[in-house]
Length: 232
Image (cartoon, rainbow, N blue to C red; front, side):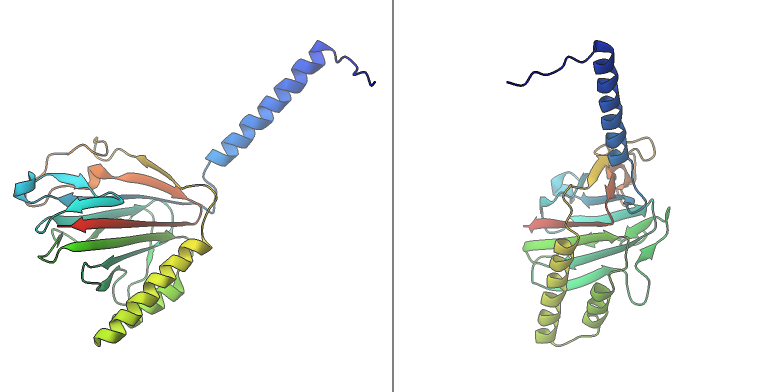
């Protein structure tokens, strides 16, 4: 039988303090954003038609909306990154919404982007079904995705458009697999103009403000989210 030597209480206390300090330092290092992190604000809002009360609500990962409801997205990077937004209609038509034409995907920190711009809104048409929006933010430029989207914009044949849409959706799937992280990105409500996410700030009924719905996201170099809308 082996006997364990007794350690003096003073040494035990010192060892315990060192362990606690090391653990707390590790926790702080994990919680502090690194140089490889991306950081941005975004808000995706739906302006309900008068039958729905005319209110502005956040669009969730799974949402139910109706023909005539309007949609708008706000995006503001806190770090230098590339931003992409695509829409898949209930009829299977894929449309890249950002960037457009020859504009770069990179957005400088502090730049406020509204899609669509100004007082314009997307409006759900008379074709019910499932609509999807694909939001992607990345530190590195996604050149393959940009090439596919640029080519897609030049096509007119239905069969070519369908094939191109499938290629783009497959590229998004592969990007998610490539950048899949062991830990989920951090997403939290933020204050904009003194309001909290989910609270409505006074605005005109013509152009309601969606920025109070904003959330702040921090992710390890890549972030992707799909908004699926049950369009009724």
